[in-house]
Structure formats: structure tokens, C-alpha cells
Length: 100
Image 1 (tube, helix red, strand yellow):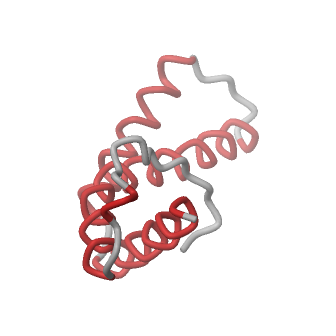
Image 2 (tube, helix red, strand yellow; image 1 turned 60 degrees about the vertical axis):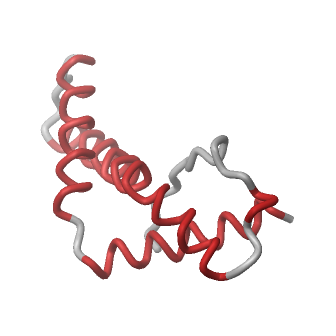
């Protein structure tokens, strides 16, 4: 996947119902939209910090929050099919690990 760590919320996953590959894929597809936003936000946070260092400026917390939220939503909408598939595969791996 990518170098970014994202926390995927598995609280609504019924792990006892995950038996087949199709079950894992279906769960991953349900979790994918929120995971895309979180990945976009992780990228945005790193970008924000790099820009702050590069320009030696201090943006406000509200500017930072707005930048991160907007970037997360934009990433969700504009992620390529390859990025979506890689993230979905990552989610399936995480589901398998959490099921153990």
C-alpha cells in the first residue's frame, strides 16, 4: 500500500461472518470509502507539516483542520482505481489479522 499508517475502524465488522474470500472482499468494500478519506488525511497532515517547515510559517489550527479534511475528501473522490484496489487489498489483510 503506502508508507502511511491509517487506523481503520473495524468496530462494525462481524468477524464471525467472514468465512470466504468474497466475505472479506465485501467487508473491505464497505470500509473502503472511510479508509480513502483517512489515507487522504494522513497524506495531508504530512504535507501540511512539510509546508510549515519549508516556509517557516505557522498556520492556525483551523486552517490545518480545514486543509486536512478537504484533502481527505478530495482524495476519496479522486483516487485511481489502482489506489483503491491497493487499499482494498490492504483492508482485506487487516481484516484477516484482526480475525485471528
